[in-house]
Length: 130
Picture 1 (tube, helix red, strand yellow):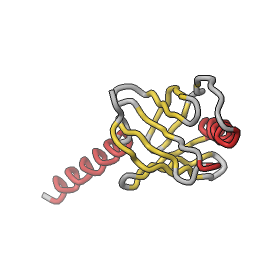
Picture 2 (cartoon, rainbow, N blue to C red; picture 1 turned 90 degrees about the horizontal axis):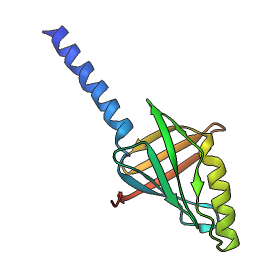
Picture 3 (cartoon, rainbow, N blue to C red; picture 1 turned 90 degrees about the vertical axis):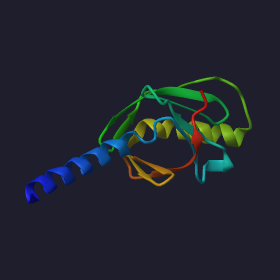
């Protein structure tokens, strides 16, 4: 009986970890404390490993996840001009995104951690609009 209970608990723990890794899919987030008070969003498609968002320009790309490791591919972006402070924030953010190595979820907060230990903390703002 103890062995069966141990196996069952192990399955629940593994299922919980797998669900956590995918629970940001179909959600959209806003970066807390963004540089120059820019509004920076980050969303994840519900059915593919695609990310997207907006600062001044719309940006988009693909990502991979393995456990709590995440890797963002190169981002494509539109090429509109905006206020200089927001353009600087956008440029700096898009340079940081490919350096992200891990993620964690804490309720409605998504934390992306870069290779140099910087944390980008995002607040969930809702489900992705189709």
